[in-house]
Length: 423
Image (cartoon, rainbow, N blue to C red; front, side):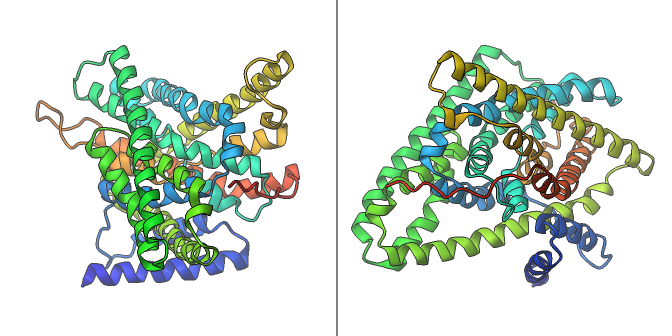
């Protein structure tokens, strides 16, 4: 009953603060995180720990499915070069860059542990970026790139993390084997997502006259798809994304207009509640994690976290602007399938680069670090790695979250384009 009361209390705070954020023109993720930190310091409140399995199973599937379902396939295809560059290449570059900085900057941080920290913080969280930029008039291209990146980069980061953990726990790391495993994970996710999508399409066509059954299947299948893919050692993230894209393509054939509105209303409520809970839970973790760090090391670790935040942001900005130049050169030379619509300008590049906030996935995989090594010794530097990960997440969400609307206003991005609808 006590935990039930706490959940109700958090949900009530979340709803009220979301309404307040609209009034005071402050991004609601920032306000919710601040509230979470404040609530976490209430003495009478029990420690609320975040279970990584709950995050990956309860939060990720519906959020990924919703984003994949609503993304424009045409825009995604047009900007796939940029999306792939950010979601795969930049993830590995960021993990490596953070690892180098952590190894030489933080005392006691070995190379394997440094790569663990880099892998944890390698992926951005577009849920946070889109929540913060909502209503700011971003171009549809920018929104598509940010959402598309988030649909893929979680899988890249999780694979990188598993390889880093294997190295840290003493398991031999072979590059070519790791590369093959990465391809198999991604390909397996695509296959399972497409297969379940086809199956769900057949089911929905058979039951589409029953609104409740249809919507129930829509709500259930992202979780089923994720669990199935993970059970078969494929990427659950990619499987859910492919499922969302597959169902979006046949939605006009399967869903009557009335059912579309009903389904959208339900999904909007679910996504609103999940997003709000995510940001409050992120804030709640800070008071709990800070207790595991010796008092004399708190400020040094916060300083390391700030430096890592700057490095991650610099790497992202450099990669986005180099991508802008690469696209322009490829378009001029007529190489590849780069069209004029795929080109980036300075304004879009700046917003995309600055929207590199870390979020719930980074936090979940950090807290999910193993307690012991394979030889039954304690996992070295576990608490500092978790603490610095939380610090970086907070720095990016609060610092970049507060400044991003100002940057959007400063560069005077054009009014949001109309979304291209596809059959």
